[in-house]
Length: 286
Image (cartoon, rainbow, N blue to C red; front, side, top):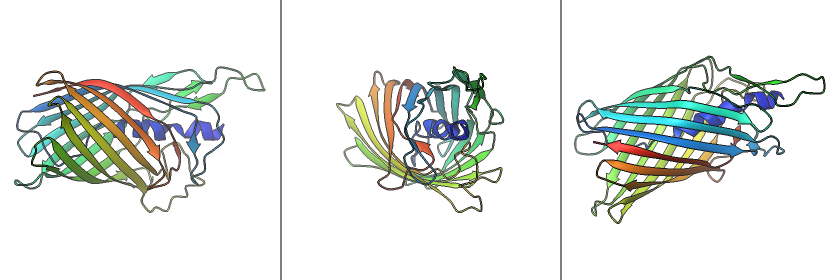
């Protein structure tokens, strides 16, 4: 029961992190981008802190309504907001509970005028203390209903620092980006490192297809992962891959569909549920 209580935040965290792109470009002054999407994740496959696939048990489900926006303060400064407006978490053996996820506020600065290289700093603001208990649907052997913590926020402040570079090829329809990030965590949790690449191509002047690949590693820490709580994703590592399609309905309105999943071919899956995330949304750009 303790394992079930404590492994949930990992999925909630990564559920949001892959919805947005990391690129070297910034918005032009007064230009903006706004995306709203609904996402779904469901899995019973949990990888332990040792990287072992645990025995299949209850199915974990999470659904979310996500809002992401960018605004060009100037041609080199872009303000960013990433808001999980609603999260609904449950096991198939529990009730469903919800709330607002961590709010991320950031700013991106274009370092070079002649090349899209940017530095982004974003603050993750917790919306509660990391406690959000759900009752089990059936009583235990003592006739009591267990309570399981299904947090929608980690209860701690995080600072993400990201360096990203992009390149647009001569045909004007293909681009590539690469980034690296460090998540500086509070409350004595281990810092995290991420790195990734993406490649996009415009088809028929209407449809963007974007492939993404990302890894996460745990940076050195004195924390003992084996004895620590799973609740805040301590010791979590993974390889994540995905594809995004964006169809241009008009010059300013798009339909966006995304799929991402985990693998272990670059970095082992540890302390994470393994499964696919599906999302569908719309975006506006001016």
